[in-house]
Image 1 (cartoon, one colour):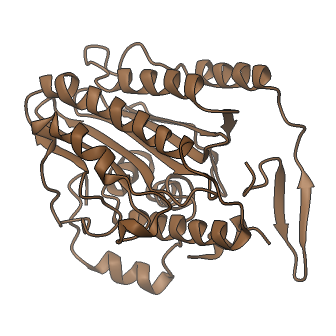
Image 2: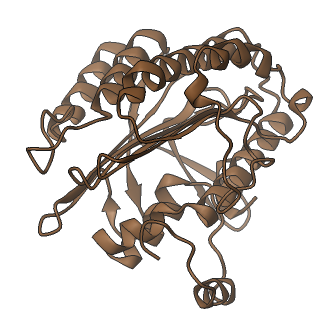
Length: 328
């Protein structure tokens, strides 16, 4: 990628930027082998739930996305899944409570980061979440995917081109006109988001797919094909756009990625679930340092104030990081 030095570890010193090579670039064949080996090491795609009698409802979404990325993205590469304190967070499991989580990250010429997360707690909870951040040479929306199922009774699906700006015209290409005819095909996915956690006027488009439903057939009758069309349309949008490698413009895009990450990390209702299953320290670092890696962590005072407020969590209860990514 031109705007991010993918084979260098960037370290800041008080007066200059030092770049240390990590490794020689892999060939495409070597990268493909590395991805397959990493997926197999994690047991992915899983063939059965941690509770074997329960279905892995969203695993077909994972499998389709992996195949699609391999076929349609240029120079697909595996990236690390780490946090500063806990190191590798590609897998975690709470055996007594029968819950586990798996994560994989990728980059390509088109995307600086594609994160995939699958949470499996049997019938109690199934989650597939993925974020596609365009390379900062593309001033285009983030592709967000969040699919959840609770107790095989309640389902939630969100797929969107998440805008970097409230004004669609501030992106290098408009996109809602591409999404509107797709959304029109799927009546169940035309719902409205509650303002309980998120403000739909920030980082959500007018053509977001949103649905709360209790009929599991919707998952494959509507959600799966709509998800596929949105993913393909996002990749097409990137490929049909002309990248801008100007340093100032790339850094502005990274600023907006950081703002998006901070907004999302502060509001993510899954933090309570992760804390209950894997511990609060792990959950906080996982959300701020991994799920939304360019987010700005709240200060101790802000954190204390937040903890004093009643929890609205249904599960349980531009920043320094952006500057480190920017071109100097």
